[in-house]
Length: 474
Image 1 (spheres, rainbow, N blue to C red):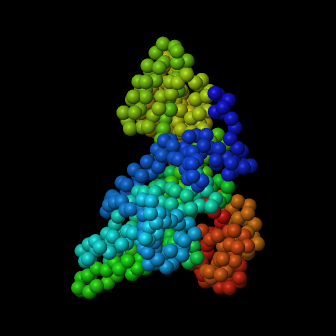
Image 2: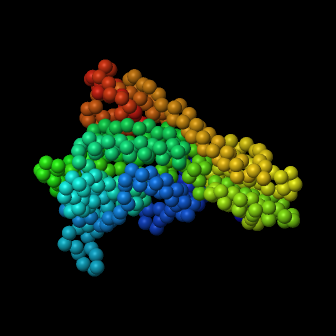
Image 3: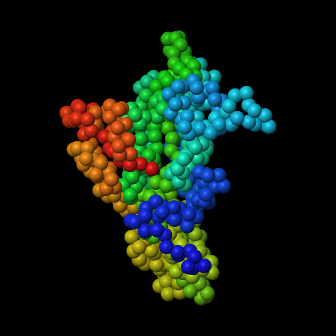
């Protein structure tokens, strides 16, 4: 049993993709579904998603967001209303043609996103400026048929939240997109300890049907970017397609302005690849399903298990997620298991510790061992968890800073990105120019860092429009 569990995971520096797969499977976060491209999120992985949901629900409700639920089946005709939108999603949609043993009169799309069906309902609910802003969110699954799936990162079905609004003005729609961008950035920092690049997407990379798209780009340990959330100012595009009109204060009919925003279970993949190391997961305490694990030492000795149970209850009463592992596995097996699972703090309690009124604490982030007093256990544990959270974020921030390089010509940009970096370079903003870079190198723009007309595009030599991050992506 010991040998089976501690079998080596791939070397994180030599085979990062295999390391990722080994970690998420061996830690019991996920398993493969019976249909290619699908995944089963196991309890340990789903607990992380629940913590993300809890954090965001609190933030959303303070911003006036209400949760709702909309059907997963969308009439094909709804998608055809917004031409740019249907073009963007056409390669990924799953279509239902038969149901109840009969061929359907109209094909049904299994939602890849819900703009069309939500906008249809908004058109029924919104009549006056007094009904605005309308802001709803749903937690649901979506289907996007992936050709090269990878659990959490790209699967044919995944979980997410999608928020949708109708606003009175263009300014309000833009402000909402930026407010939600900031909300996501706070969540990534405070909960997941992930620093990100934030900014506007180029015209080529924006969401299909949007006026503008904003993104949060995390940089993984292999130098690739992972889009970790997006917000969109949709202008009046979807309102016109779905006939969302309202009477303004002057008694005139006008189209509403909308925005949308979402994050998904892809965040769990970001968590793994941002913080993990050669021992497996390394989870920030704020999101870890188990924040503290207690391992009895010499558990057959009188009073050891009882003391561990007492300590567990004290910690649990302080709203700290704690587990006591009193199984028959050896302490060494347990040390390895919970290190691989990324549990932030391990407490070892044996006869000598009890005699001295201490527990031996081991940090997952630094592997440091220290003694903490049992009669002050809650304060000591809380302090350590705070220190671990801060340190994990600081380590990730160093990684992202070291991954970014400023480049001044095309060859240099390509070389740096191929060397596991993210390049900050000038670009003209021309769609053809951007598409040529992608075709030649598979490198894409990630987001705009700043606007600039004083330099030349690294690819075509024309006047630059902005400075943009270039990188490879998951």
